[in-house]
Image 1 (cartoon, rainbow, N blue to C red):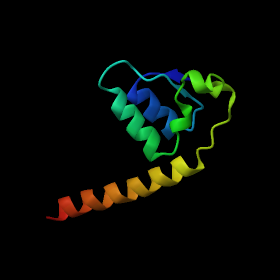
Image 2: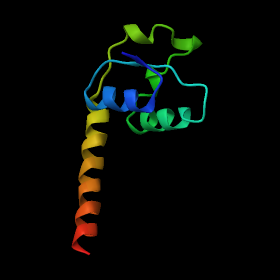
Image 3: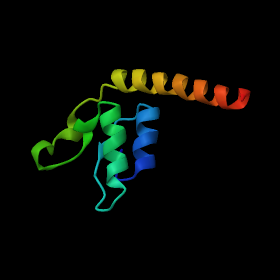
Length: 84
């Protein structure tokens, strides 16, 4: 999958779909870079230095771990909010 959108990036990570990130030329690119840094997948950004990024396998193990932790954290926050 080739994407330049935050949501495309998020879905690719959530569904463990191999992807290449083409950063958009606007302010939303920071969101894309943020989620890639959080999940340890910044190397999926296409640039002159790594034009062969699409040929490299994606290891989603760290990303899955981070997302699992963030989901637990989010549920706890929601639970506290509901109880208040």
